[in-house]
Length: 209
Image (cartoon, rainbow, N blue to C red; front, side):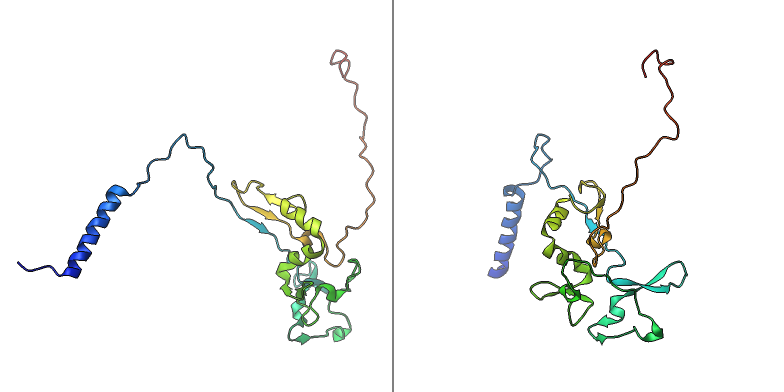
């Protein structure tokens, strides 16, 4: 009778003991307890932020290819890290419509990076892409930024309860023009007037209008 090598015999014993431990000593999952009302994590759907296509672009005074509107041009077309390109003298007209800045006492470089106008910068000097504009907005507009994340500022389409379905939130520039964020003053319309007075229905209802 051949002797079993010590190392091989030890591995065999560990395997047998481990199997017995899994089969007898380890707790096996059983059926859910119908009386267990402890809270469980429910699946939550995503909340996306709608990024408007005009973010990082400006309207021009030139018609688009379908002649149904004006052409929008990305800021990176002329202003980028590779140098500033001046198209104002080309064809004798500016590349885009004039920018009317009415945002407190801010200037262009208060938000745009001085070396690369296609990026924004925070107060600490760090730069951001246009896709992270809301971080820049929240730096100065703290109460609105707080209320936005609490759901009382901005807008939302979809499900408020994220356990039932997804939702889409508005972006800051969906409602506010970044260079002129304040809403323009408008004159309220007069109250609606009926085109004809209400008919007297007291006779047909027995005296009850």
